[in-house]
Amino acid sequence: MMKKYNAVGCAAIAAGLCVVSAAAQSFVDCFDNGVVAESDSISRFWREAKSADCAVSENASALILRSEGAPSRRATILSKNMDEADFWSAPVSLKIIGFSFDQYGVTAADTIFHFGFTAHHTEMAMRNMKDLFVVSFRKSGDLKLAWNTVEGVNPEDGNILRSETVSDGADVDSFDLQVNGSGKKLVWKLILGRNGKLEAFSGELSAPDTETLKEAWQSAGRSRIVLESQTGGSAGPGEYVEVRIDQVTVDLGSE
Image 1 (tube, rainbow, N blue to C red):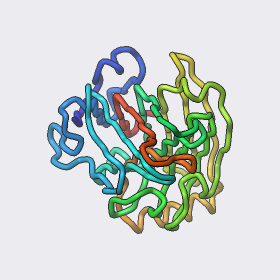
Image 2 (image 1 turned 120 degrees about the vertical axis):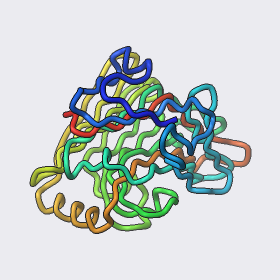
Image 3 (image 1 turned 180 degrees about the horizontal axis):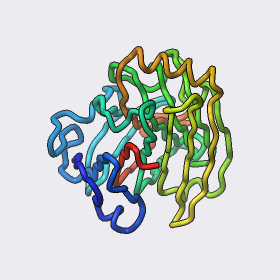
């Protein structure tokens, strides 16, 4: 259920998990109307990439991305094109709040969540998209941030900007991906939350890489957010990965 706020949104915002400045354009989805695609004011805001053995649903005020049954199953949704995700014009913050993993029969290393931004035009698994700026995170704590402009590349196998193994990966409950491409070099910051404790990583693209990504993105003429759960190589029949998200917030101009 997508809502638009000028200042304060859902309970998580009130609790200080995501503060929206008065000057920012902000969208908040609390996933509490039972229909993933629909929002208060925008019909079919979210678009699901249909895939075998995968499901996307809302339940108990949360988004559920479930992939199961075999390796490399992916449950993927994308937003419509949205000005609030245009990090080439102003700083953008994408927050994932109330995040958790659930899995059965799949190792922590093969319990995977990808999220970030794309200029891709059709709904499909992230591996088949081009023009991506994404985070790949595994329950084991493996963390990668990458970008690419070509199809057929796994999110974690693109142009890697940061690769880390973080402690207590199973305890991560929020992400804040901040991207600003309005200058000559795209700068980024990723903040992980664990029970109120924050860990931050940051960096930038070189000027040539920034120009490469910007040209591809602006040629596509759109900015979307994308969320995806994935099973890794240990998944078999009846085994699954679930990603649960209580809230997604996108803030433009809130640096």
